[in-house]
Image (cartoon, rainbow, N blue to C red; front, side):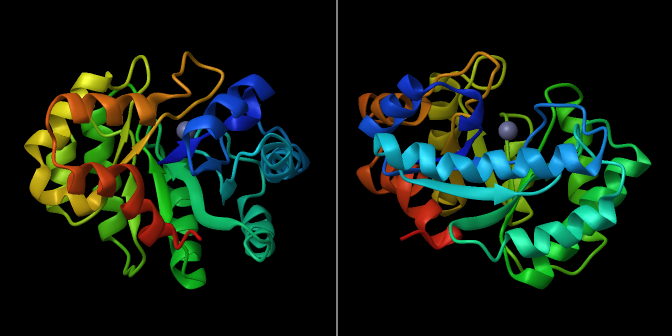
Amino acid sequence: MIDTHTHIDTRGMEDLELMALTLDCVITLAHDPFEMKTLDVWITHIEKVFNEIKRGKKIGLNVYIGVGIHPRAIPPDVDKALEYIKNFVKEDRVVAIGEIGLEKGDKREKETFIKQLELANNLGYPAIVHTPRSNKEEITKLILEEINTIDTNIPIVIDHCNKNTVKEVLDNNFYAGLTVQPGKLTHIEAVEIIKEYKDFSDKILLNSDTSSNFSDVLAVPRTVLKLKLNNIEKEVIDKVSYLNAINLFKLK
Ligand SMILES: [Zn+2]
């Protein structure tokens, strides 16, 4: 099983060990632990995300990385940050640009989002896109519109989908991330979405978004258990909890 969206830099070793007990690997992404008052604060954050590879290794957790600028943590000099991203992706174990996206959808967020999508496209990396808790439907629409303004041929995951946004995301041929976390989806809501959109099971990914917010570090294995209890076909479960992530992020 693979957890495709985490922030394990916010958690203690005991949580990493729980994940190691049940997961083949996790992807941990850049996020918003601080206000990025200077570019150096953002760089230090990305370095800390890389450090999770080492921490994971200590406890037996296989860690992959996403680098990027979170919409709630945009540093002053975005263009310089993009130059850093170009170098960061050369490091081992970087599998995505993320998480990027929109929170409120203002001009600065949009510019930063589009620049990162273009960069991801030029570098040939998949993008992991955040959608916010508030105004989710409206901002998801805006995100899809923004993506359509540019030409991309990379896989794009629209993450934290709910039952109101997942259809449009899948209809537009994007990957849909289902985040099982208090305030986002319950395990059962994720099961219901997977049941309803079984025909799109090649395009659905499960994750916990484990962060300093209330989280279930076992969200993926627990949802897999609920999928089994609800008699979802093994083939579908394998795709949403493992195979899709392996193929999309080219994990080994
Ligand atoms: Zn996140």
